[in-house]
Every structure is written in C-alpha cells, then in structure tokens.
Image (cartoon, rainbow over all chains, first blue to last red; front, side, top):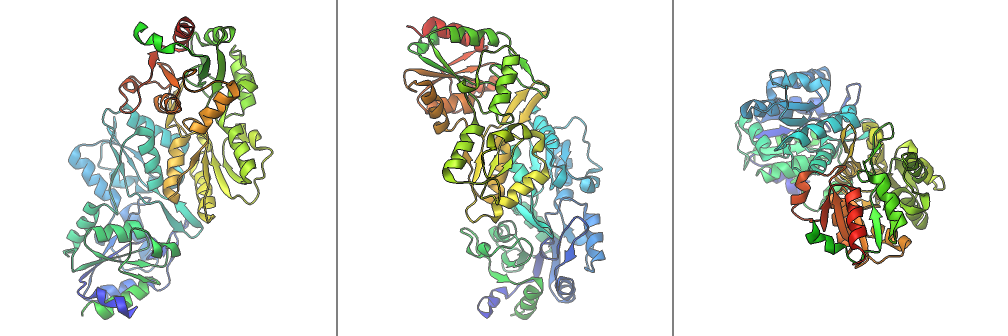
Amino acid sequence: MASWGKRLAGVRGVLLDISGVLFDGSEDGGVPIPGSVEAVARLKRSQLKVRFCTNESQKSRGDLVRLLRHHGFDISESEVTAPAPAASLILKERGLRPHLLVQDGVRSEFDQIDTSNPNCVVIADAGESFSYQNMNKAFRVLMELESPVLISLGKGRYYKETSGLMLDVGAYMKALEYACGIEAEVVGKPSPEYFRSALKEMGVEAHEQAIMIGDDIVGDVGGAQRCGMRALQVRTGKFRPSDERHPDVKADGYVENLAEAVDLLLQHADE
Amino acid sequence: MASWGKRLAGVRGVLLDISGVLFDGSEDGGVPIPGSVEAVARLKRSQLKVRFCTNESQKSRGDLVRLLRHHGFDISESEVTAPAPAASLILKERGLRPHLLVQDGVRSEFDQIDTSNPNCVVIADAGESFSYQNMNKAFRVLMELESPVLISLGKGRYYKETSGLMLDVGAYMKALEYACGIEAEVVGKPSPEYFRSALKEMGVEAHEQAIMIGDDIVGDVGGAQRCGMRALQVRTGKFRPSDERHPDVKADGYVENLAEAVDLLLQHADE
C-alpha cells in the first residue's frame, strides 16, 4: 500500500462517485457503505476540495441530495455534478426538443425544456421504464428524424444495488445505437467534457492536483485518467476482483473502501 | 429491369423470407402482401425448388405455418428453416441448459431441453417480454457464468408490423453483449451456417443455383451473398428507399414485391 500511497502527493481536489462509493442503492433508498459518512465528513474538514461527480440519472439532483443527507452525508446540491442538469443545459444551448425516456423521478430536471415535436431522444437510467413499448417509442422517434440525435446520460454497463447487479443505461444506449445505425452522445462519465466541468466547478487542475475515487474501473477510473487525473478504485459497489486485471485500465491504487482512500489521502496529499 | 433479369439464369432453388415478403405481421395475425399467396403457388407449380428461411422467433414453426396456411399460403412445416428448432438442436448437441428469454409462443420448441441450473442464455424476438426485469434476469444469469454463452435467434435491428417499425432481437442482443462484455452466437440469418442448412435441406448449391428473396438488405441480401448466393430485395416489409444506396450491400436486383420476383424468375431461370 505504502508503495503507491506516495502517488497521492500534491492532491488538492477530490472527485467522489456516489453510488457504490458513498452508498449502495436499492428500491427503498439504499444503505450507506460502512465508514463513508465519516469519510466524507473528514474530507470536508480537511484542506482538500471535494466535489461529487455522479452518473445517477434516475433521480433529480435535489432528490439525490435529500436521500444522502437522510443517510447522514454532508452534501449540498451545489456540490454535485449530475448528468440530467448537464444535459438540460446542452438541450437549451442547441435548441433540441427531446423525447424523454427517463424515470419520473428525474423529469423535473427537464421542466424548462420544450418537449413538443421532438427532434432528439434523451435516455437515462430508466430501470423498469425500459419496457419494450417505451424503447420502441424512442426507436420510432429516432427513425423518423433525418439526422437522429440520441443523448445518453452516462453509458454504464451495470451498477450494483443491494438486490444484485442492475443493467445500466449503457446497455439500452447500445440497443438504440444498433437498431438505428447511429452513435449516441454521452453526457456523464466517462465523457471528458463532463469530468472537466466538475473540475472547473471545483477550481482544480486535472494534472497534478485532482483525483477521482470510484467503483467503476472504466467509467470512473479510466475516464478520469484519460483526462489526466489520478484515480483510485474502491472494492465496494460494483467492484469485481477481475477489475484489478482489467486489460486496458489500471487504477493508481485500489482501496477497500472510501474510508481507506480518505485515510491515505489525508496522510499523503501534503507530501 | 431486363438488364439484370439475365442474372437469374440457372437458378434452381429459391429461398424465401417470410415476414415482409409473404405477409406483414401484426398482433392479430397480420395481412398477406398483395400477390404473394399466388406467387408462392406459381413457384411451387414450377420446376424450381422452394424453401422458406425465416428469422421468426416469436412463434413455434407449427404456429407460424398454421397462420400462413390460414392466409392461403401453400406451406408445410417441413419446408421451413426457423431459428428456434435450429437452436434447440445446437443446445442438445452441446449439452447446454438455457435460460430462455423468449415469448411463450415459441417455448414449445424447447420442450425437450433441460432448462434447470442454466449454463447459457437464449434470446429470441421477445417483444413485450423484453421488460427490464426479464432483461436483468438474463443479464444476471450471464454474469454468474464463468464463460458466459449467449445465443441469439437472429440479430435483426427491426422489422415492420402493420402498426409500424418494431425493435428486433438484435438490439437486445447488443444490450446484453455490451453489459456483459461478450459476443453472442447468432442462430438465424445472416449466419452462414443457417443459410447452408436451408440449402442442404433443399439439395441446392449456393453458387450458380440458389437465390434468396428478402426485405432485409443486410440480414437477407448481404447474408445470402456472403454465402455465394444471389439475392433480390423486395420493396415490401421493412424495405426503405435508402436500402438501394446501402454502403456495403448491393442486391442482384430490386423488385416491387414477391409477385414481380416470381415473374422474373419464371421468365429467366431457364435461360
């Protein structure tokens, strides 16, 4: 451990993934990962800057923060980078009118967006709303467009809930890409623009200064590293032992959980 | 037309796609494509050998034939190559015990197959059964296997029913491939083994002797041509005008419908 702990020297800002790092979700709200509430509190008492960088797209940012505060986390909406508000901004800038394939919980993020006569499709982690009927509706909207635009809030393969692994939005993005012969635009990790917007909010440079802590070897670790950041993978959430032998991505370090990551950061960041 | 009609010389066996060529499906049984009942009858009165080569995987072969006979088509079970019975044979040969993500209508094709303690997943065109819950169940079965095997009955992108375009099994195959990081084995068009098994049943050589008639530029036309066959695309079913400018596949000829294809075949095959 000590061997790579030195790689943490100079860190000034920490990006934290939420699901699988702070807590494991479930239909009835989920449970905090042991030690994570205290770990976040310790980070926020330190000199390090902290920002939460999530691909959560089932809930609005407000609902997510309320849930986390209920679990005891010290977190506010302004500290969270989430794909739905980021996508909402992009839709406004480009004058896009989306057909939304999302759960009701996140629909409020698009309240200011014109959804009449759609000229694009936005898909989020829609869970049970990924019915055949809803997928076929989104497919037909895309096939009727001359230049189909598909925006996907993240492209995760799966995530872990207390009941087990759950298919994530990326699988359904691939289904629509294949059916329509198109490529989706991803808003969320591992898109470099998304990481950069989170770093900008925090006022920290990717190189030398920033580190990402996540449970997804590709979306969190690989994505952050491609932006020039360091990245740790926690052995919680959807972590699988085979991740440590991933053919393309190697984390700067692997830790049991967020608590251990924070221990190491507070020990080495000042070096 | 006459310019390419000569390419039909020497044809001895005709493979016919069913959906989009013989009839357009719908929830309540579908409607024959005008002229197709008579075109099949004329083909069968001719010297040409005929076989039906379908990717239909919602219904058992028996139910499909009953439906077609109800619409007036001269067709029997022994003349049909369909992916579910082909997959059933493969499962038996390889000792695979499938978790089935299929519609109830096709389940009888797997009656002889042990489905306890599954060591593979078989997906078919499952329509409404492609719920999130069913997809997640199939995903979890695959993720629990050391060497996951996914068998997909076809890999079509979409097909056309009277109500409009419908997502086909290929989209859901891609979703599971991506989520699990695996590649599916396809049983059905455009798999070369599948075309070859149909040709063998008919006793006709791919080169020089056989022609495929279908509405799918990739699955029917491209697949058959890669086996050395000639292939016509009909402008019925899911045909779209852009198919005639497809970047990779060019049919040997395009016809309005099966009736025109049979006219030309009967005129030129003997040349």
